Amino acid sequence: MNVEEQLARVIANIGPLHEDAMMQAADRLDRLTKPQGSLGRLEQLAVQLAGIRGEPLPRFPRKAAVVMAGDHGVCEEGVSAYPAEVTPQMVLNMLSGGAAINVLARQAGADVFCVDVGISGDVRHPDLIERKVRRGTANMCAGPAMTREEALRSLAVGMEVAGLLAGRGVTLVAAGEMGIGNTTPSAAIAAVLAGVPVETVVGRGTGLDDEGLAVKREAVRRAIAVNRPDSDDPVDVLAKVGGLEIAALAGLMLGAATRRIPVVIDGFISSAAALAAVRLCPAVLSYLIASHLSEERGHAVVLDALGLAPPIRLDMRLGEGSGAVLGLHLVEAASRLIGEMATFDSAGVSRRRED
Image 1 (spheres, one colour):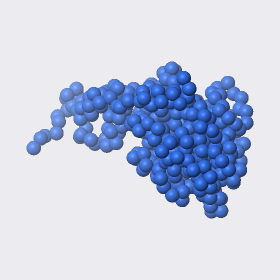
Image 2 (cartoon, rainbow, N blue to C red):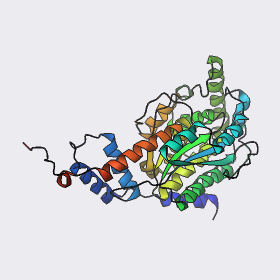
Image 3 (spheres, rainbow, N blue to C red):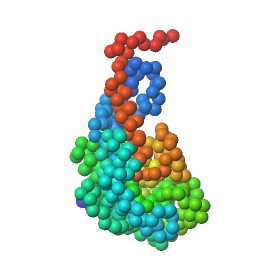
């Protein structure tokens, strides 16, 4: 089976949420010792989780934060305030447990998995999942970031990692990334797939000044003009103006959905990957959970295109999956509330008087 056929099979296996489990969850929420609907979006989340897992009382004993890593040839255009060598350095930092994602994952009780999809250099560590498709993308301002086959292989990496996690008993995933310069291809993906002007999705990334921001906007415009990605073909968009780790994140979301594993998406890059995944398979949207609203300019635009409203607003723009891991706490809260709260009958509490 080639990768195109594998992708088609995965997409075909993503079904709708489990309606009966959702109905049972909603009924139980209405019988808990609280006014109906008083827990707001936590109740909506609990129902969604029940539908994803096919269980009225979903549990998430093992959680994972996945960091897909890759480099970007477009950094040659001066679109990042940091040099490309930071990517492997930060991946080693993550593998050693010293990055923000590690701290927040430990707090959330999640394991961190780092995947090399396209780091330009060599990273050696026993815990690294090595799935390098190529050593970074090409400069998308001069031509396609990668071939269609490489984009498909990157999607396949994500689908494979979803299977690996499921095999280890993981039932909840936070989707993160590491790749200097990756807000630039994310902006290009967002502009093409959401059909919005470049100016609305290009932000300052790691801290560009006004001159750097102008350079970055021009780089995204040029990349789109040179490559003319087909907005009706998400694989073409990923190949021409995307990133290896972004495609892998999209594949992770697709692979997780086939296994009824909810994925908490992070900021701009993770959400651009989600947009590509949803364009490939609209059904995957039901398996995605928004975490936070990033400070990166295009994030709100992408979330709006997805129809998702993030519950957390902390002015974050780190990436790595940091916001997604914070979102794991909300998933755990929704799960525990529906599973552990007493009902009016079990607690002997009087219900609201009916008029």
